Amino acid sequence: MNKEPVNETAKRAKLLTNGFIPDLKGKKVVIRLVSGGQPVTGIVEGFNPDDILLQTTKGQLLVFKHAIATIEPMDEPKKGFTIDKSCTKPT
Image (cartoon, rainbow, N blue to C red; front, side, top):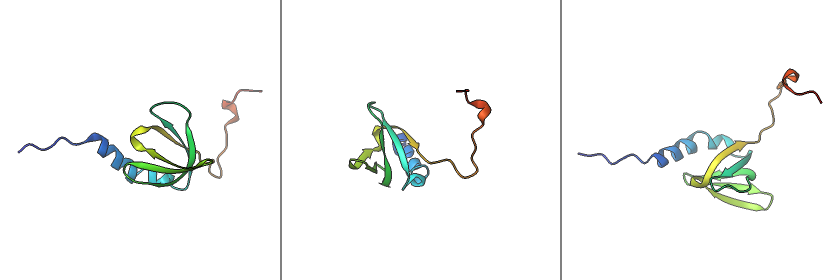
């Protein structure tokens, strides 16, 4: 018996839905699309295996996961976080 080939895209979508994306719910993110153009900024309201629902300044936006190049969380640094001044250029 031959097994059907595993759909790699479906495996990646399941991994994102079960791991990375649930941690972003209610948080502000920047999403860059595969097609380029301006990045989309908003708060993750919900998600499913195929898409992510964002609340943007212009209203709700449904982004299909297959169109996403990157997702960048926009969290503030945690308490106790300090910037190493020796790594910054003098002004």
